[in-house]
Amino acid sequence: VIYSAHGPMYVVLLMAALPAAIVPLVLVLEETRDAPVPSTKEQCGEIWSTVCSRAVWQPMGFVYLYNVLQVGNAAWKQFLKTVLGFTSSQLNTLLIVAYVLLWLGIMAYKRFFIKWSWRSVYVSTTL
Image (cartoon, rainbow, N blue to C red; front, side):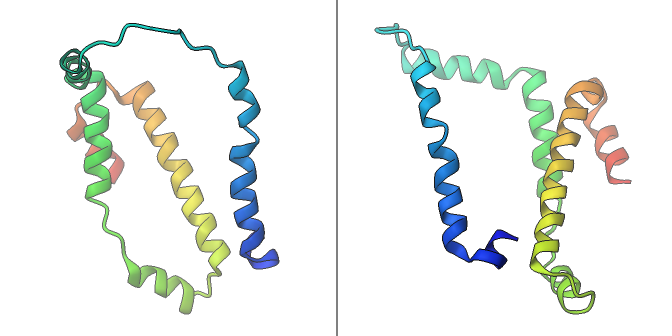
């Protein structure tokens, strides 16, 4: 909507202004000075033990597999635009709604479906 009404300059300014608005919050952050830094081997070991946790690899594996098995369809987008007359703004709105629903799905999995087998979750969410 902003791009269609005002052009790319306003989009670029908005994309630059929003992150710049966070800069004053950096002053509130605190950091421990001269904190001990573990060796690379210890850091990699900690990362590996985290990844080996079922609470990490199962949800991430599910999200990865679900997204890998989704096939993007350029013909469908072309059909939506030419035959059904969707505008670029409407297609972008659909994309935003899809991302919000993806986030809600991840949160639902984290809260409710973590104890299910990933096969059951995949089959039930695909149907």
